Amino acid sequence: MKLAARMIATGLALGFLLPGSAAAQYFGRNKVMYAKFDFKIIQTQHFDVHYYDREEEASLDVARMAERSYAKLARMLSHEFTERKPIVLYASHSEFQQTNLSGGDVDEGTGGFTDYLMHRNVMPLTGAYEDIEHVLTHEMVHQFQFDIWSRGRGPAGVQGIAQVNAPLWWGEGMAEYL
Image 1 (tube, rainbow, N blue to C red):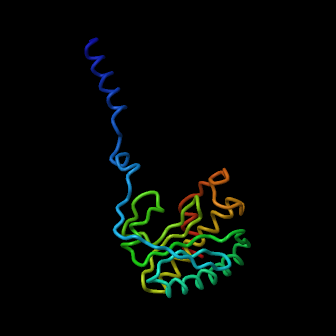
Image 2: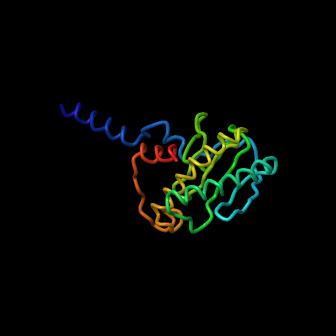
Image 3: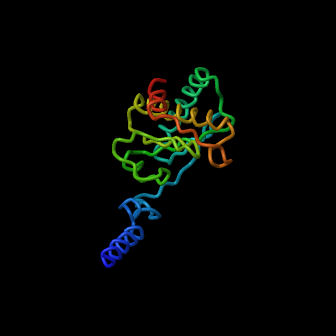
């Protein structure tokens, strides 16, 4: 009996020492970058639009779309940003998937995301302005949500602002509705 108990205890100890999942094996590794992006910035009244040269014309259009969406959302939500929010644009979805601004891998179905800590709106330029404006406005709603939750004091976490754990259906539902 003692031998069996020791074997079980040893097995449990080894189980706790070994990594629990394949995801843990990926932690700390760098994402493969196939291209080097030399970002430039377009500054508008409410946004810093990060882009690279070959998408300058489309990025100027996105900057105008962003200001137009901002005006509509600020009026609807009765809230204004106290500082410019970053918008990071990639020329294609495959280049967007190389971003290191996300917490992990970006899959093929992701049209864009907003970083909770830095309030960054990150998205690819898909070529259809109607789709770009839809994703831009959707992600901007998240920027508003995060800014309201942090009470307009800038990116959450940077100044020790508590995180809000709103239900996914509420956050995504509001973004799609607006």
